[in-house]
Length: 101
Length: 237
Image (cartoon, rainbow over all chains, first blue to last red):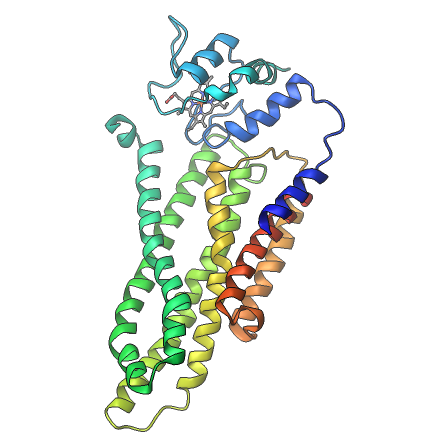
């Protein structure tokens, strides 16, 4: 029953126009990152720091490998963030959003 | 691991969350025991066994039940306040965040459940237990014991009704996030939720059990209520 309703709700969601990389990155950020980072990436979150302006390389290292580009000074010394390697193909979208004006 | 555990923002939150779930298991486990097991047993057993359950078993179960509820509430309150403190310090919006919408939806129901435990269920059960002890000692039955049982059962069933959506929204705060903007209708969402949840709570205090009288009815109702709140969330926000 619950599954049916969820399915119904999913189908009614209007997904007419194709989202731009920035919009898609914004959606991905809200879904995958805001458990730890702030809803607004310019601000520090409860667990993770601000990640506004992250480079492609930083996102790739952090999401896929769980570390940092060589020589990069992390904002936090901790190693708390989970790896999210399944987002690898979405990194350009996340990058577009985190570097949008 | 110890580094993370000793980090105040991360480790402290985690330890309290762990204790919160531990106490919550004790509480809700007993809630389900009362509703799904003990109630059905009491309905079909003989008067002697009933009296024994009320005198010897129920007080023990109720002790773990209400203190489980108290510690779940206190650890949860700490988690909410600590998180609010961090978010306010960082200048993060509390309205426009799926974490806050979800956790407060769960916390609203959980707080009412906690108040039902101490304010209704435990107070009414005390009347029933005292009556069982008195009648076993040959004293006359207290006429208030029967309505006390009805009121305790209704509040208890109401707590089961709240429990499935409560758990869904507590868990979704950190595990099922979604986009929320400053332009989203968060205020309208809260008005609808407060009316809906308030009506169910009012029914739990002065209303009738109706469809949640049966075990099947209350479990189904609990999942339906979860689905209803999900749909409200989806279409309003």
